[in-house]
Amino acid sequence: MPIHALSDEVSSAIAAGEVVERPSSIVKELIENSLDAAATTIQVQIKDGGKSLIEVADNGSGIPHREVALAVERYSTSKLDTIDDLRAIRTLGFRGEALASIASVSRMVLTTRPVAEQVGTRLQVAGGRVGEIEAAGTSEGTIVQVKDLFYNVPARKRFLKSDTTERGWISRLVTRYAMAYPERRFEFISDGRIKLQTSGNGDPIEVLAEVYGLEVAQQMIPIPKASSERITVSGFVGAPFVNRSNRREITLFVNGRWIQDLGLGSAVTQAYHTFLMVGRYPIALLAIEVPPETMDVNVHPAKAEIRFENPGLVFSIVQRAVRATLLGQSPIQPVSVEPIWSGGRLAQTFEGSDRVERTLEPAAQSTMGLPVLRPVGQVGATYLVAEGPDGVYLIDQHAAHERVLFDKLMAQVESEFPESQGLLQAETVELTEGEAELVESNLGVLESLGFAIESFGARAYRVRSVPAAVSNLSPERALRVVVEDFEEDEMPLAAEKEARLAARICKRAAIKAGQVLSLEEQRQLISDLEQSSSPRTCPHGRPTMVHLSVAALERQFGRRG
Image (cartoon, rainbow, N blue to C red; front, side):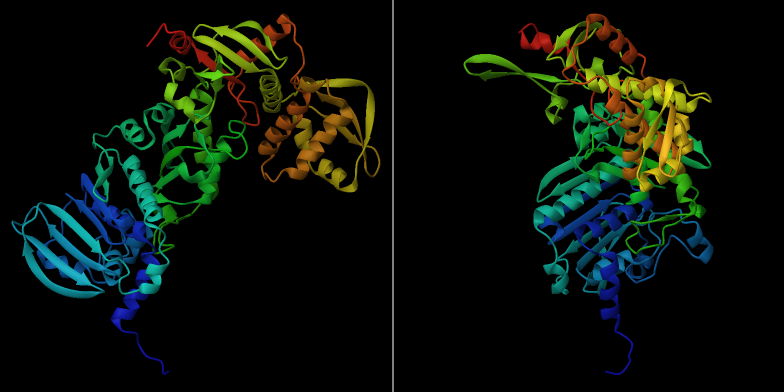
């Protein structure tokens, strides 16, 4: 076959493949067009997961009659003009491909009217073939109807997932834009049923409650808006005990654009270090503002990926903002109490699972630290029972002691003179060649924790002191715990290594489950925990306590409805 130019129909279909991957791709492009048009109301309707119908209607600025035909041509846009505009994009759309790509793989109807015109305009495009322009009675704004998606590209249509799956993708997309733009009114209708409806009154908590439910919304902590290096981070992060089994609920917007960025997602999850258990991930909604000229959004036709001029700086600022928010305001995990009949008698079940969220007490949510607690006793030589002004606290003695020791170690790291426990006689520890190399290359980190170690031959080290907070560990055991963690550690930053090593050491040195404590020992442990800035989780993210409120007790005993 000789070389020849492809027809407009074929080239448009090829280009559409980059922009329109699935129904949710169309919804994203149309919502972003509506936002660029300053719409205050955006309604999304779909049928059959978007396969047979997608309709996005807005009350935005509309398209003038003379520009309607041009709007569905490839590379036609009102959002940039020169190459300089491309270097600092300030709109969500800019490529001039969306409408043309959508129209080339569907039967599309565009109806629009700007405020300056008395009569609207309607244009139909089927498989890229433009029909006649007609006058239409319509309100101000734009309505785009997309029918029979991929009717002319059957190979693409076969790769679409089930209606439920495609509907789920669209729902997640609409809800994310609704959360990011609480001042805009969003409505999502699927197969005639309203799935989401926001008021557009600008209250983000109201939108969060609509998306996640009131209980979860009450656990979302606002990030104090602050600027650093011309970069601003704001939004909400969930309290540590409100978490999920995957990263799906980490939502990132950069300059108003929803993006998927593994680096920034990692910045959020690392900010929860020691707050979440392994395999659990936070709920977060972050709005990041950067100077447009310092990022490139023209990376992929779908505009879901961006590149930063200084990705390390953005990562650091996001991580610090989330971490500071968690340290400052993260509440205590409450518990639900549900009566259960077992073996003919009434038993009680305390839970810290997702069901907890239905019985949260507002009073427990505002607590930044711990109230003064009075030790009552010990259960199973593992859990401490303490009374507080707002109910009963069950404290895991091992997790609590881990937190106390970890805080002491990290406080030493931040000081210039870490507190060490000198040994009466230095102890020599023999290591493998690999272990010796790890210790040698990280002596500075070990010194910051309070170790005093010196080389004593090819693969041996003499330990002269250990961190005072964990002096109950043998010197050899303390050093071997460190070596084991270095072998597992992939963190590049010394500060991260220090935290992980400290957590590892504290796990070995902390009071164990099954260890009986005197009342005075219980009192001292609880008092130490009260001084912690993060008393609710151990360094590995496991909860140190659960809270049973007085109100919950009253309900169980029939004193309160």
